Length: 258
Length: 307
Image: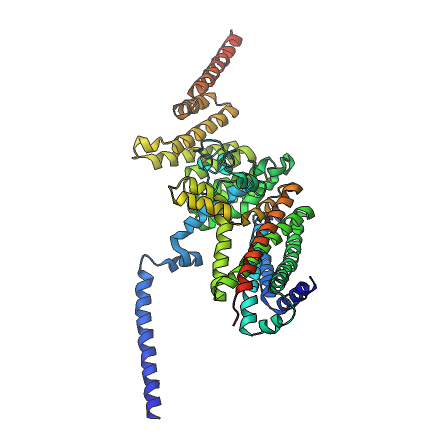
């Protein structure tokens, strides 16, 4: 376990030095500040449009950070040949993989804390309320969703040759699931065979990332999700993350590294 | 050295040629009817008439906010949302909605769908009725639809519904009557003599300012504009659902105004006109009969006192 933490610590340090997060955070702050400076019909209490814009930017930034950073981990190590001295140490391939995953996922979690704190401040400035439990549920589910995305990207970096293709494919797959994942079964019902069965199969196989998107509930001040349901969603995310990491390990343990 | 000079001369020649051509084309472009730059609006230049598509999306987004996010997607049954509820609830827009607005999702298709419904807005609510909290003291939260309506009207100034909806919620729930009136006047600047906008403006004077003579003038102007715009149009179009609805509203409100000012003969005349287009002519006829009886009693009473 210590070896996994050591590798993840190196990944965290690397992410800390990279400028991706800072740039995205500043862009989010600037756009939110500009949009927040607009007043409609002299009413300073209108806030939901601002919450929607800010949360959209947070989601886009988090996906960019998670996919962009994870996709580079193993290929960069291989290209710079630092992977070989690492593997020469008493570290198994599974530990390297888990260390990389943990580092990227923790980095995403830290970034999300800062983003959500900023969001909370923006919302509180206008709404004069701080629904911390709602924000905690949203942050935790968002982070769990990023766990699946990080694991998916890690798997992509092992089966796809180029970093750019991995980033593009993972990003498209993630966005597609977020937008239409919930409706695939409904779409399949209006189709003919064999496409109907294929789409239905896809619906049951894909990780339903849209489950973790609580933006609408946060924007429109809906009450909390039952905690039991929230825990089941976390377990669902953990199961998919574990599955994707297992698949990654199966590929990585037999992979010939040159 | 000589070669350099030749290149410089050639470059100069090309600059002169390009400038000349640009000047020539610019003159033609300025006169071209498809030139969007003439409007001096950067959005016109960049996206042209696609603005109306975006305006429609923003208008819909306002209705999504009105429902606190509980809204059908393109995959759901949208029959109950054909007319935006935020517009329908103003009473100034005819409704084309059918079906169950609360159950457009239908029963869950599978366990994932059932589970998914915990993570999305899953109950039909309206912001003016308190939204998800059902707290009627929060009806001012309807303000949240205004940014999207404002953007929509900026992108498509010819869509009168946007002004009507904005003005209605401003004056009824947010006590911003002056702003509501300003919105309607802006709408009238872009859509001169529009009967729907005039009707809504008349309501501002009738319900908020209680300036009955001015409300009457505006509604009569709206009726004149409606008649002028319908002149020469076939009956099928003249008396389609939306036009009948507007005529009914105008005549009904004029009749109510005349009743309030004690002009019962004028009120009866307007009720008669309203009856011709109303979906409930029997109820109106009963009201007309009551008014006529009251008038008859009033005319008899002075005669009896004279005897």
